[in-house]
Image 1 (cartoon, helix red, strand yellow):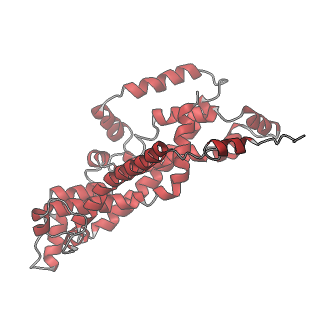
Image 2 (cartoon, rainbow, N blue to C red; image 1 turned 180 degrees about the vertical axis):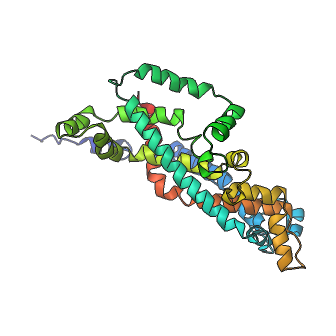
Image 3 (cartoon, rainbow, N blue to C red; image 1 turned 60 degrees about the horizontal axis):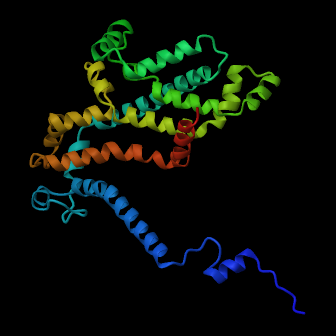
Length: 314
């Protein structure tokens, strides 16, 4: 009498067409190839403008006028970057931007995390009223003129660094997402900290914040990019303190007025001819974009996780 052989599920699947999880059909392979090609084209079209901007910043006026689209210039010239960096104020403005970005991001994260932690606790007195006021501020604001009066006349911050940091110290939308993230942290961890003698501040610093690095890094990047790219606040709050202008305001002046750096370079080289306006704009974009782009790789691993976890809860 022959003994029946028991086949494993994988053996049955191999007889049917292959191992578990493997798609050998022609349609599946064609679909995968289509996905790879489509994603590659989308990625290429996304990075293409950046490559063109970098190439155009090194191009000559003749090439910009005769070639509507190129990635690598035929004749490389540094005139646009010489035009921008000819002013000795560029390094000072760069330092101002670094200080405003670092200090502003620290202030933003401090107020965002502390307020979000307080509102995440249901035992907070007046919690509902505070939440309603926060939500109200997300849809309505006092306007630019009242804000200018408050900063310049009441707070006496005109022509100071704090005039571009304090008015945007907290974002209601970001704070609500951080609050949702804090509410998702297991309550047992905080209760164990209270049993060990920690108060609310120690619990926030030692338990909650270390567990919230993804969301803090994500919104820290949002705040940093906002401070780095901001120029309008410095224009209206620091008109009489040119030495405190951030990089974006100075680069705007170079593009629009074209008198500061061009005059400095013309004094050094009488035969200097100003580079084309299009090339200057491309060089300005490169100078103002590359520094903040260098920060992103260090926060990339927290980026997606921080946004998704904070947005999907509560």
